[in-house]
Length: 276
Image (tube, rainbow, N blue to C red; front, side):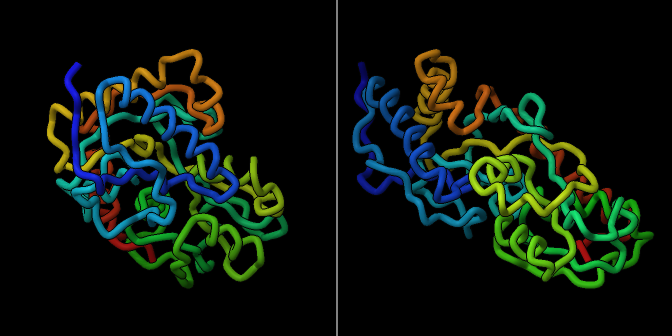
């Protein structure tokens, strides 16, 4: 067996679905993957997950051995910075094999019944670089906006959980929430979403991929990917995967992620290049 050495500063993180209540489950997933890698001769692996990573970081740095990221930034601000490893399939409403989507949510007691009703409303935006928070709803509302601003205001909140809090409190009217985030909040913070309802679903898109830095050599990335697939296929690891609602992890299709730019182009062609 060839021993795989590396710098002592490599990092691993799972920043996308990282509610504090899910910390032990995310750590169990990394521990299982690290065990697979050690069996394959890897050394100097991160001892634990980096838990403070932003959901949309400034970049995928060269020290990133393993992470999960939003698919839209991979085509924009993170273009060329990451290697795709695997695409998850989640056991969650709104997901199909290797895909997810966003839910447009409002308070149960609001007057809004369909997307058209939201014209002039206030929108809670997690990030301008988000696929489910911005890119997917931008296309949905571009088809309704007639080339003009649609919302009365768009307020950046910094995260899906914060968006939900501000809609639930009545401070803002609506938000577009990743359907996987939504089900995790139902699992772990039912009170946070109990006052909300879904008025629309966006188009689907490829699920959030597992990645490594583009600085990771191709041979090491291939072995990392193989270890990820072994983990997903191991029946003894089912409790680890089920703890994160993971049904399986499969080979990603780069063209599917590049297709997210088609959504952006269509919105621009409709005269709605910015969610507004």
